[in-house]
Length: 138
Image (cartoon, rainbow, N blue to C red):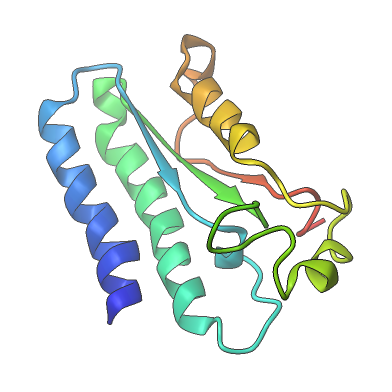
């Protein structure tokens, strides 16, 4: 219930409120997960469900808001070094072996993709789920 409340309902409610204040030509950028497409471990079904919902919401919302010139995109990170998933944590060594680039991503690498999608150069990208995963799903 908590995963669904935070990862689906939280995204829905926050987006609904943001749209009320967003002008034409604005940007909505979701943060999903590669686990919406690939679940390489047991026990990840509900998490994958929530992230797949974000990807589907992104596509539908892109259609709904496209007439206003608002783009809606979803970034799907792979393993990123965070407090919840540290690059030196208990699962890290095994997980790194599954990556084409055998290291965890860094927060600034994800931020770079967010920055690009927020820019004028990305004004024709909408409804996309873009993986930034070090080749985890390659």
